[in-house]
Length: 91
Image 1: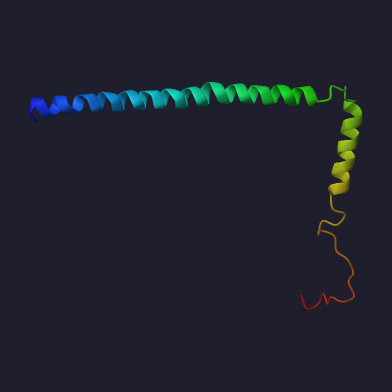
Image 2 (image 1 turned 90 degrees about the vertical axis):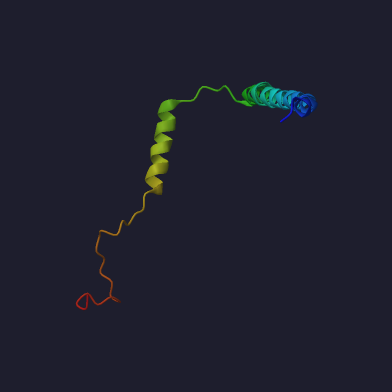
């Protein structure tokens, strides 16, 4: 390439590099600072809505055990029932 044609495009190359740098800078600032500030505001609003009651841990554990007991099935499939409709000799 001749020097004259190269110097003709230097202006456009510098403008392109500056625009790309400004775009990257805006993207970085948006992701690192603006999103962080908005998330901090959301956390602050949610923390102001949370109830600060003291929970009785012993009562909570009893309730949780009761719920787990109710969720366990009564029949696990291991017991054998006398079903008059099934012929056990064929199986």
